[in-house]
Length: 258
Image 1 (cartoon, rainbow, N blue to C red):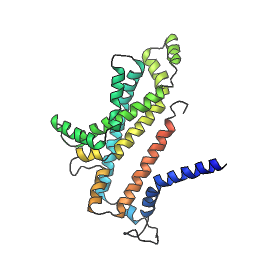
Image 2 (image 1 turned 90 degrees about the horizontal axis):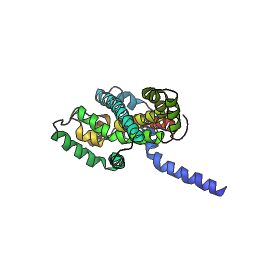
Image 3 (image 1 turned 120 degrees about the horizontal axis):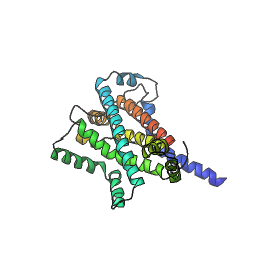
Image 4 (image 1 turned 180 degrees about the horizontal axis):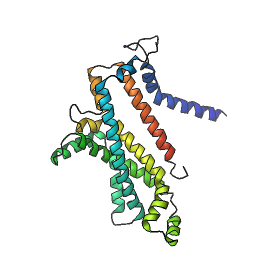
């Protein structure tokens, strides 16, 4: 009994450590005071101002459609790469698998600098195409890891049974393999969307002035002075990100059923 109580208390302290700053920021986004003065007086003024701010709305829409494009491209490329690695053995396969994952661990500051130099070197330069390509490169490992983990629970006897019954390779892929991989593919696409939508460092290096994503715009606004509108937009971003992560966790039941 005491051990269970201590475990719950330990878990509670960890959750407070992780979420207390976020909770305070979310609560203060509804405080009427511009200077976060107490006592707390409930107001939706900062959200009303936020939804009439054309600059923030444009940056938010830019972040959303870039994240959607990145999620689509990264999901298709990542799923095809995963199925190729899962189905086939070829020389250098382990080396190739190992090289897919360093982008997750390499500091994004280094990655952003390298991408900026590379894109200028090949003539792409800065701008929305560079941002999308950079985000796809960052999101691909997350899709591959998620889909590959899902495919580890696939029973190859099902594929052999379908073939023995006369199913063609395309039919086997469409009716046997892809339905099993679907939860991993959906979870991977959600991870890719979240990685792109929250990405700041690479966007900061690759976006053109006046064509910023929402995280870059927030950073620029903070440099000029912290306003309660930043609390409001940050609260919305956190809510969207957590909703995406919950959905990804819902589908990423790698070893079981949906």
